Length: 159
Image (cartoon, rainbow, N blue to C red; front, side):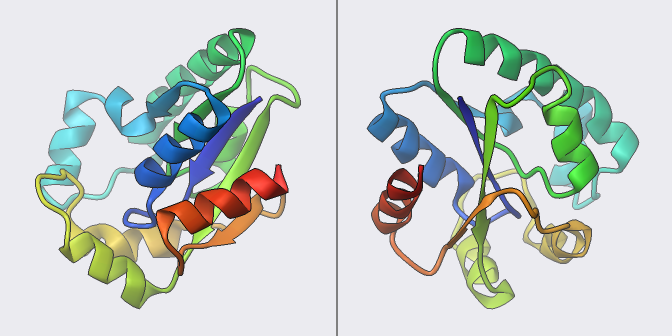
């Protein structure tokens, strides 16, 4: 199984994903590490990615998900904001992905983003991400109004 920890920027995907992977004794991957230089430059300049920017990135991740699954469980942190993005992520596999949606208020997300240092995601893009977000129907939903340890404990109990 590949667990995709998803949500908007600032929800804790990477922190939660890393601890979840540790608890599951599985490798952790961050989808941000697979963005093209062009995508990173756009986001660094406060320019939201469009679907054409995301498509090759998501398809590349889908191929990796299939490979990771074949090696055992894995955890991927990925925004996966729209259903079509989640469909692309699962396009090379069947029943091997569990989405874990980290849900939080705009105020909490903003506070977390403002506390970040040296991250390419501009705080001003939160509104764009929230407007893009299509909350999943088929994910494990976990509130981020908790510690990272508490969030991961909830996830582990649920899976």
